[in-house]
Image (cartoon, rainbow, N blue to C red; front, side, top):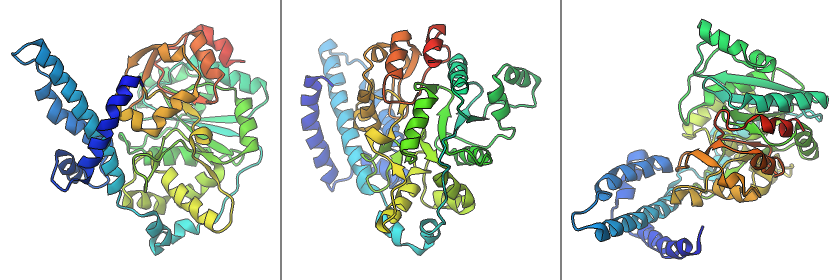
Length: 405
């Protein structure tokens, strides 16, 4: 962020805090009541945009000077709303961690028997896609190198947009690499944005059928590998913990983590072994996809720590974020999301200048239209293992050599 923007945001933060403490009704409070105390920040922000932006952006008859100032005032207003809203949501979180820890209703979760994770790493890569996997040539090169290194892994795919009974879909699947064809789930689960528990449960059940699988990692169709599997296995040997890229900044009492996490078998098994009650717990707590696994496991892990048992989670920025995404080039709200700051962990100047097909908003990070060889090398040399939001064919044949290295 440039210096002049930082200077402008300081008084805005003060204004936002004053607004939050005010007892007078406001537009934000009414919207929070409309969406509930755990209302989605993005949902509320979009409603704020819909109510304020259309009537404020039109050019006034008095000329360009007033037009400029109307846009400037709108920027300050939206930024102030954003800061105030983030603070409100944190204060309005209606579940206390202590109450959950002590609640008899969830004692079964705290006391569920411990499971074990195989000592030899074997990763199950779980794809949640619509009807294709972008940059398949990169995945093929990555898998071939892993096979050449003698490393074992599994691929499982859920494609919500593919009706496999149609001949044209069957023909499309036949063109996939063998591991992807074999790993495609036959039955489609119902899902929608923010509600993918059925899909994730089905993929976990399939992955855990292989008793040698030690970890699972979540992907979407825009994901690409940015580290060799031998390096990933080396790190998992050193520390087999589950890894979540947590965001503690918006809901301090009920934090979330990126969906694209890495889970050890022990954590995945305790969820699937109790999937009926676990699904009910998700509904009772009104959790969405970014909280499905991290929040319950985090609470359970606190109980473990209190009992003197070792932690099974890594959730910090340095130790939990292994999926690169770029949230920084967008809405002022994004700079207050913890995930935005992980972009700086990648020393990737070429990548950060690459052409985008979509700029980020409060719901989605940047989408890359094209990255050249140097940009992919920067990702490959970073601390990340995977990266997201790359359009199909955004990586060309020149990057195959890197993925196969």
